[in-house]
Image (cartoon, rainbow over all chains, first blue to last red; front, side, top):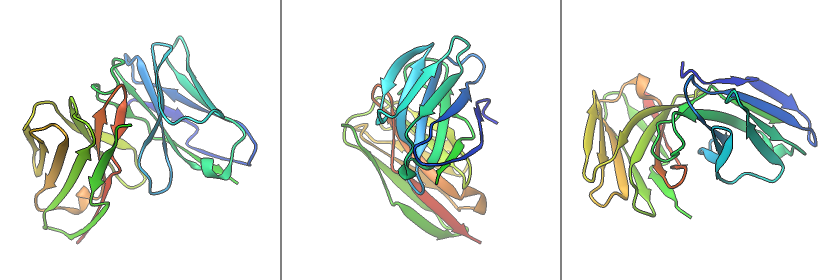
Length: 115
Length: 108
């Protein structure tokens, strides 16, 4: 158990809908990262927040947005969903904001299925 | 942008055989991290290498960072069925760039 929690575990929805994925980082970690992993694919970095502020951005679509709240939990909002958005979405956390130097601890992921 | 490639993409071995995955970056890295993802699981941090030419061992796993800090390798000696999973290397820019991963299958 990494100490990072993600809800829900599974999400099934229809095209055009909007969903919110939630992540609680490990106690004491200030940074939260979001990744997308499609079937048999690698980990695609989406976005990083550090202590409430956006720190780094990856290949995140404009239909997707995220935020980190004062209690450090984070939410990833996916809207106008398309079939191709079906994937595993991982949240990870680390102590500091230097994304490339910190060890990242991953949550169990949310499996999103868009029908 | 920076790319981190791994080879091979897949490797099937008989239990007891050795296994190596190679990681190559298009740019020099300040450090490299390795993660393992079991089937149906999430990535788990294995190790971080920082120094040029650094070699670290974890039981049957040997990690190496290249002299030019652009490549790395993970070698598993005498694989076991518990080694099954996908091994990712990851290198930093302002964020961590994950390699394409090597999926290891071990047959008993």
